[in-house]
Amino acid sequence: MRLAIIALLPSLLFAQTDPFQRAVDNGRQFDEWALRCQKVLHVWLTHADPKTLLLPDRVPGPDPRGVKPGDTRQLYTPHNSAADLYPYLILTADLTDPSLLTGRLRGMLRNEIRYASAPDGVPFELELATGKASAPSLFGAGEYAKDGLISVTELLGRTAWYARMLDMTAAAMARAPVETRFGRLPASDAELNGDYLQVFPRLYRMTFDHRFLEWGRRIADAYMDEVLPGNFGVPSNQWDFKTHKGDGKLRLRDHGNEMIVGLVLQYTLEQSLDSPRAAAWGPRLERMLDRVIASANPDGLLYDEIDAATLQPISTRLSDNWGYVYGAAYAFYQATGVTKYQDAVRRVLSNLPKYSGHDWENGSFDGIADSVESALYLINREPSAEAERWIEGEMKLMAAKQHDDGHIEYWYGEGNFNRTALLFMYWKSQGVRPAPWHPGLRVGAVRDGDRLHLSTSGDAMLRFDFRRFRRVLNLDKNYVRLNEFPEWFTVNESSLYRLRSGANDMIVLGAEMVDGIRLAAGNWTVEPYRESQNVR
Image 1: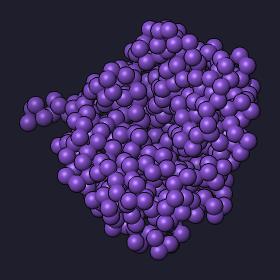
Image 2: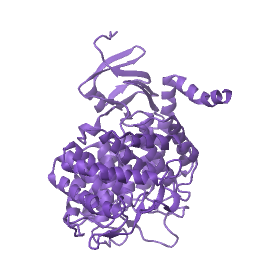
Image 3: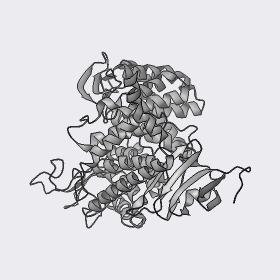
Image 4: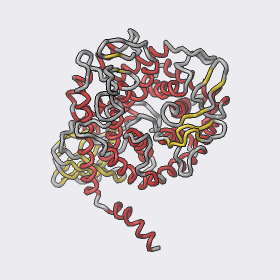
């Protein structure tokens, strides 16, 4: 009993800590990581091609993941630097350097369309030194949309990058090359078809353009009606739609798990439309998710790749993308109320401390970034003290990998460093964003029900978050979804809020808080205004 009490002391002390002190501590972390992100942004801008402004995939540096010795080719690719680096520099600039957002980073979009895209908008690879171009790439379009432009849209809304995603994916589908009885698909593999299937349900909800609904259904029908029944209830990495056979493998890390996420996202759309597909697909998706979760290790972590028939691991390495798949399972729970998937998420989160310092990806920071990203999506819906402590420790490990020049490993994956850092920071600030942040500005927050304890170290214009899942994406529920930016403390634009700090006491409209409200340095209590409250 005594040992049990001692073991509980850290969590008890944490729970009793003054919320404003915790908010101050969160603000220190916000400031540290904002500076790290800004360094990544600035150092990558020094590598931009002088003519096109486009960013190469890799740059010279001491890490073997950078440019190899003797390789003078500087290559821009839509599926790498455009998908994984550029979008997170956009989101970093939104926070730290807004003039770059409307200047050089917008210029990159202009020049990408000018120099690295076909006339219909489908992107291609470009050798920056010679101007030599590859063929237009449907893979590039799908990755750029799913991994990059979706995230920009999730956080910033309907910008020029949103319009780019609309037109680019529509043009890509006009080129879809794989003939099936369901219509032409972008590819025969789960990765690329899954990329598009994660984009189309979002775009349909935002536009009500029936092309996106039809394209999403086309891909989902092919997998629901042919691939899953023919591959033991789960997607196949590769599938031949002529012979109706696959490779019998299921990859549960990136480059394979995209289809699981996409199928569940399309299902949530069909359910909201009260479509017959939802009723037909429910049992099939449940079988798919059950088999995937059954393949996990004893702690619930997933392997990189499994045999579809036996569920035995083909690779014994654990997937750093475990939370992408569990996010799909949780979204299915949100849609159906089937609690075994909520329980599965709670279980894996509680076991994360066993994997502190785990090498997810051959020593690369990228494995840490993806695994922490996974956890942040899930603790937004299912708070877990074990997972939160694990995240804190992993972020320290990732920080230690950054060099003084701002680089981490000298390749396009450094965008994922910023992505996970921003996700972490907005957890620490509960979605409150300085407009803009500057070095030394510490903004942290702790939520208590509908009340926010907010600390800012200096006078600042602060933007509060709102229900983006409904206002921007038109979702009926805030489903877990890959490449989202979770919502923490949100305000309703048409409601009133009371903000208090010492003698400062004000009543403001939620819309004013979303646009940005200037607050003096100090500790602030933010809560919905009630008529019974007396204002001094």
